Amino acid sequence: MHIHILGICGTFMGGLAALARAAGHQVTGCDSGVYPPMSEQLRALGIELMEGFGADQLALKPDMFVVGNVVSRAQLADGSPKFPLMEAILDAGLPYTSGPQWLAEHVLQGRHVIAVAGTHGKTTTTAMTAWILDYAGLQPGFLVGGVPLNFEVSARLGGMEMAPAGAASSLGRPLFVIEADEYDTAFFDKRSKFVHYRPRTAVLNNLEFDHADIFDDLAAIERQFHHLLRTVPGRGAHGSGRVVVNGLEESLARVLHRGCWSEVRSFGAAVSDFTAAGAPSDFDVLYQGQTVGHVKWALSGVHNQLNALAAIAAAQHVGVAPEVAARALGQFQNVKRRMEVRGRVARAGASITVYDDFAHHPTAIRTTLDGLRRQVGPLARILAVFEPRSNTMKLGTMKAQLPWSLTDADLAFCHGGALGWDARAALLSMGARAQVADSIDELVAQVRAQARAGDHIVCMSNGGFGGIHLKLLQALQNG
Image 1 (tube, rainbow, N blue to C red):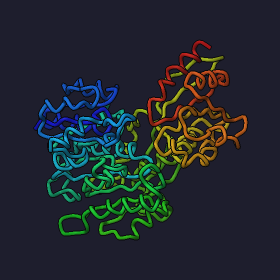
Image 2: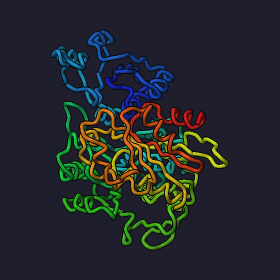
Image 3: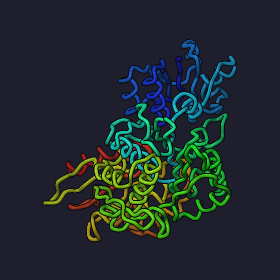
Image 4: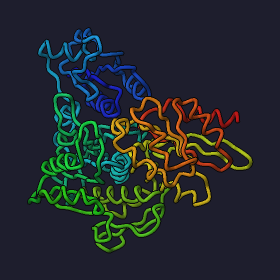
């Protein structure tokens, strides 16, 4: 079929476009400010991209319009629609669907789906799981909300390899690993995206309050996670569904207490099925108290150790032995924008290192900085450079947690432009350790003035951050 994708440059919708193209469909798409890297990836696949959401795109006459959740019924100040193409689709009575629903019906149908959900670590754990299965020769399909360095693409249709005999998917289902987001599906479908995926293996990595723009409280998100549990198969003669759950999270215990019909494997807590012994960069993997593998890798942080346990537990469900999974993780290269080193500048015999990280929620900021602190030791200076860019952070819902999130930083620099709350007041308790700038150039100047040899500068945002990484490197080089 010919599908036209509204909001095609988002990570999820761009990945969907790549999968649809690989499956033989004709794909076109549009977005506002068609932007790289997704625009470049899609054009390389022969996908025609259009700027804006003009109603004239009806002339393409696709078989289906696939609508991303960036699209809404919003109106501009003059009363005209922000998305005229969507209004024209509705007015003409043309067929449309959401991205998650199209994916479920045309890609995931008939596959053993491994869905990775959680407030934090979804992208990394999805990438880990896909890499473990690939290492084991199972040719999984995947859709990741980032670019895993082991694959260099965010989505792949995958082969039709079957899981080993005796595994949970031994009924002949090929494997597909998907990042399972709790954000809503589309303006016309306010359920979480992940309820469309119907996984046989569901990973619940962690759960805390986020997305304050669409959820009132943590209980509302817990309800959505329980909707996901309702879609996982139970125990049966033909192999069971499995829920892999973080045993450290009280919120997930409440989700399971609402009702769970599937096999459960826990990780992380002392009494969990899967536990770790050793430092996050070099540790034994234990299954029900017995050592079953060893992971030695370049990643740091307890959060990545927990992500590894979750991925190993998910892979075990489809027949990959924990020992094999642990060996695979020894070759895992992480995901772009997850503590990715963007450059180093020599200064007085020691380099200043600039990192890029996707962290934006206070807990994610704290775990990112904790992981780096463990890696560089107590004496090296960490400079945290961040922008509160997510919808939740823009609302100021979690501003009180920012000083806590920055505990491991020696200095913190916040981009406070375009916020509806006072970042300086929120960081007041940090005293001289925190500075706020209203523009990227001012922020770069602040960091440049404070940086010195041996520093580690971590830039954290869920957006492009105004190209700050390159600007910082240039400023430090010239300074």
